[in-house]
Figure (cartoon, each protein chain N blue to C red):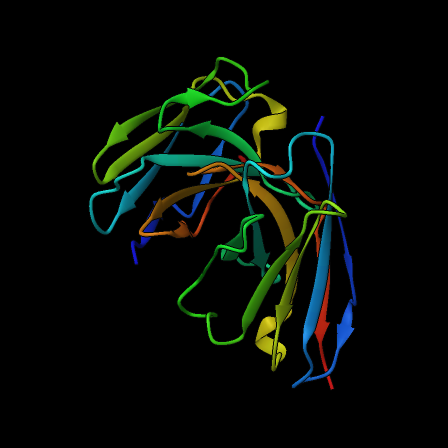
Length: 116
Length: 107
């Protein structure tokens, strides 16, 4: 059974860089794309981007300038960095395993609050 | 970027009633639609993919239909555990987008 376990700082100040990591337990790491998705309080889901084990990445056009994703196959982990955060980046961030077209496995979510 | 519009925003129904959720795409969806169920404090759960294929463990009262730009998720007879928010999602040109969600609440 595939499990995604994520962690990272929960409280940040404006202009800092958000950093989250997700560990993949069970299943094959290398055959999929690994995504980050966020949800602002009381709002809907927003896809941030995805990365593959080969370093291929695709990012949301609206966040592309601030996002960086990477994969560490030796640790079965993948990571998200989002620079220059503002209060608008306050959200629950989820990691997820993507097929080409949908997400079956999700992490538990990490609430990231940006506040001065 | 394809925009997904879900309607209605809120559906107030009683257990046993039929729920019909709509998802309309701003242009033809090349890869079809997935649907997710989300309960408070939980990650979304895949309910339907390829518009009409139930995900693992999803009961038969859930069905999906549609193609092109118009898609529907139907719950034939609502059970107490079905009251939640439902999102549709698509992928096109290497970008995923989600609809704004439909909340199915107890009347």
